[in-house]
Image 1: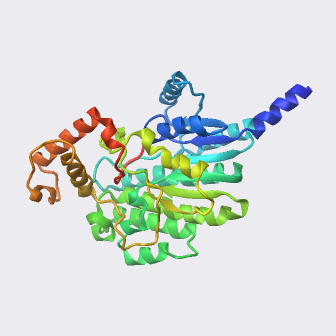
Image 2 (image 1 turned 90 degrees about the vertical axis):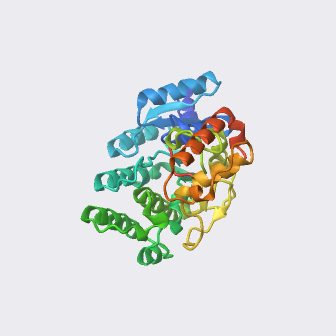
Image 3 (image 1 turned 90 degrees about the horizontal axis):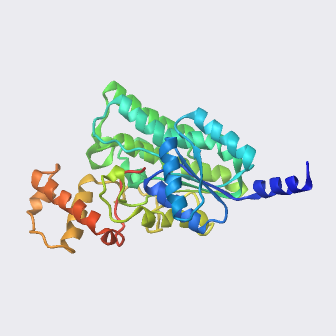
Length: 357
């Protein structure tokens, strides 16, 4: 091997590497763009759909950035293994992993098949990444799981599981048993809405995100000796396809806190559940008001819109209804159209979120 070849190989292997999953659009795309601006290293935009991923890279290249692309379906263990082999061969290690890939159920239909699919993607994918990519993490690497307000322990109302998930010696078995308990209840028809906040709405999403947040704590404890930091965060209500365009800030605004956590946050923030405004929230406070509330999204959208535009007030009884009335739906549609036309108004609020690209 020539001396020049040796130098090139050393340079490539010493490059810092950042990986963002589910990044062809939405929050993940915004994170990649922000990392391209601020990270001194190679940024990989990954996605399940190769064509869409390459299109996203092309958009960023036109903006003057140079992200790299690799196909990665984090829910498919063989895809993760293939990516692992590629990274190990070409770079030797990883400095940053941002697990952004995920899905939110578009319905409250609580079938076993739908529930398992949501959990396999949102939680199972994190397990796949841990198993195959974590061994490549370099000393002092940083890992961030993009969660939700559905990931806070206050989403759980079952006393037994609150106590078990709150254990200081929490294990993977505890978390996996929690997931299996929920899936088993759906399969057997014993699911109780009272076991979860907000009358048990979108339970599979809550379970997947609570499991993700709990796993963050376990991972941090195990990786601590290597100086690796693992956190999870709730990015707020972001205007993406998965929120049907409703949101208080853009994907670029939403990317700021994730990038802060992997590049700038002090090492004291570790194994933490972080809010979109960089507040470290006590994940164990199951009596707190951090859980996802479906109606509060619409109520807050309406309240904030009324403060900025003139539309007639509507009866408070509409806002307190457990379902969206036609009149309320009309107002929400008006809000969405208003925010689409005036994106600047979306950047000043940090609200609750329920979906991820």
